Structures are given as structure tokens and as C-alpha cells.
Length: 480
Image (tube, rainbow, N blue to C red; front, side):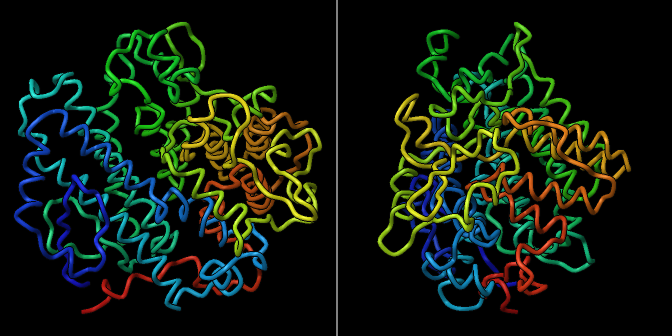
């Protein structure tokens, strides 16, 4: 692996243009960095910058949600796409220049964000809690969120750049130090052990901030994405304490732990983590995470009541509309009619698919006419309640309890206004097929279907090469 030193000007939070740029740092950058961490507010800004970096178009603001990952999952009519998406959708061609650039940008953005998290983590332990407005509680939540983001990013890099099952070979590094001149590539299991370690540490650090003294109220669906309501009702005077749905809150970390455990086949531990999320309640014993009702669909097309964690990008709508109604690219779904995607006419997710002439498009990311438009239009879904039920279903299916696996899938179907009792599952193979079908309906525009195909080793199209589930490392990372 090419020696790479992750040194970034955190105040700028930009991805540098080439690998060589990352090897140098100017005196001005050093001053900016030192000044940034002189105050507790600087730590807040540094943490916020990591979230902003992740929400960029190269990452979850496009490519890792409704962009290339949904392209590869065959959501779109490839005839209406432009390169590199077109030849990636049709040929899974990763070694032409524009495909390489797209993949390299995902890698560089992710590890840039990891470097920024590690920079923060390398400093915060030595800080006096009195530097922070919230003292020890705030210091711990900042550290916990940075650890959780480091784990989140490494997890998605191993999901993209390595096989889903450990084969004893090494694939990606796990960066824990700042600055770092070199980290060896590690196996899938080694990466996942560190992901789970970081998430467990993060969970313990963040738990008091989100669960003590009725703090769960800030995570209620009414408030976790909507400060305009929450500030007045909850008496929140510091914006840092609001918007917990846009941050790696305690339940988001639990949900990510469930995803991580399930990915490596530790289904019991995954199940236990989902239970904590599903059972979460506020002080009045109202569930924090519930499925959005059909009556709220026009106001909440991203189904935010069951969103556990989302990123935010104020340019998301403009970015999406460029592709939604673009001159050269149109994100038409690869279906002849809605029945190709949905098996139940009562499924309210059908209403999130718009008919455009002879084509169909998802309106999940388009402009909303009602509700809190500002929140809807910046929100990037990352973790959902539905995934918790899918993980529970996996646990039961792998324990040959297929009736219970079906019941967990039906929990989501009921939440989406479907008629339950339509599924008939009696084997792991049948379960895998149904899970793919359910994920296909649930995660339009969210980048998750590709990972389901990969984890279950089911090709989205028969013509897909056997090795296409693994992105190639950037060439700069393969130079010996």
C-alpha cells in the first residue's frame, strides 16, 4: 500500500485533489488546526465538519445513496443514464477512467473524514471538561460521535472494497491514529472487530447524553429533525443539543451495531441491539421510532418518523434535480408499472413513485409541497427502523424459525399499509428472495439494496461478473 499521510485543514474540510497533496501541510493549515481546537466550540465545528464531508455528493449526498449504489442495484433504466453510471450499470465496468475517478473519490472522501475524526480523537482526551459548554457530558458525546463516525465509515469501506465474507486476505486499512503515515490492510474480520469495538465505546460515551434526565424526548419523531418545534416545547436553548436525528445518537449507534453484527453473522447480538432501538420510549412511554402514517406521506416523503439517523445537505435538492430532470440523465426506474416493484395495491410506498409519461421516478428526494420543506429537502436517510425488523427476520430465518421471520417482515409491511399474510417462507433460500424484494421496495434512493444483494450473494442481474461486488482499490493504494 502506498504510504499516505492523512493531514487535512479541518477548517476547510475539503478533499485534496491528489494523493501527493495529502503529504504536505502549510504553516497556515497548522495555525488553523491549532486555533480550531482551542475552544469547545472548535470541537463542535470539527465534528460538524465530518458530518458535512460525509453528506457531500461524492459520498452520501449522491453516490452512496441514490447515485452509483442504486445504479449498481439496477433501480434505474440504464438507457437514460450517462457515463460513468451507464457502463457501471450495464457492464459493471470499474476500470475505465470515469469509473475509477468516481470510486477513488468515494475512497478519498471517506478516509479524509476518518482522518478528521482521528485528529479530533487524538486531542480530546487531554482536554479539560470545562472547555466545553456542557462540560464532561459534552466532551464525552463529541468523542463518542467521532468514534461512531470512524466506525461507520470503515464499515462502509469494507462493504464496498472487500468481500462480504472473510477469506483470510487483507483489503482495507483501519486508521486509528492521527497523523498516520501508514496502516497495513487488514482482513474483513479484523476490520469488523474494530468497527464493533469503536461502536461499543461510542455507545457508552453517548448514552448519558441521550438517555438520562428525560433526554429521550429530543429523539422523539416530533423533535429529532425539527428544531423549530423542539426548541420551544423542550426548552432547548443550545442548538448543539438539538437535531439529534442528524447526529450519531445513542439509538443510531445501536442500530449500526445491529447492522454490523448481522453483516458478519452474529445474529443473536444483532437481534439484541435491534430490541433496544425498537423498545426506545420517551418519558411519557411513547415510542421514539414509529412508521410514518399514510396520512403524513405528502409531508414526509422520506418517511422520517422511522428514520433513526440522517445526514443533512442544504444543496441536496438542487443536486438531485440535476439528475431527476437533467438534460442528459434522467433517473427513470427500471419498471414497466408499479406492480413490478410492489406486490400490494395498498402499499403506500407506491405513492412515492410518480408516473412521468411512459416512465416512473421516485419522488423521495424531490421538492415537497407541504410540511416542513426545509427539513425534507436536506435530509439524507441513513438508518431506518425497518432495517431493525429485517435484521430480526434474519436472526429467525437462520434459526429455522420461518414463521417468526415472516412476522418480522410483516411488521414493516403493516407499517407501510400492506396487507399482511401474503408471504410464504419455508427455507433460507425463500427468505433471502423475500428479503431482497422487501429491501427493494423499502430502500429506493438510499443505497442499501446493493449491500443486501452482496451480503446474500444474489446478483441483481445474471450478467454481473462474479467479482463485481468488490470495488477495486484506488491505484495509489496498490503501488508497492
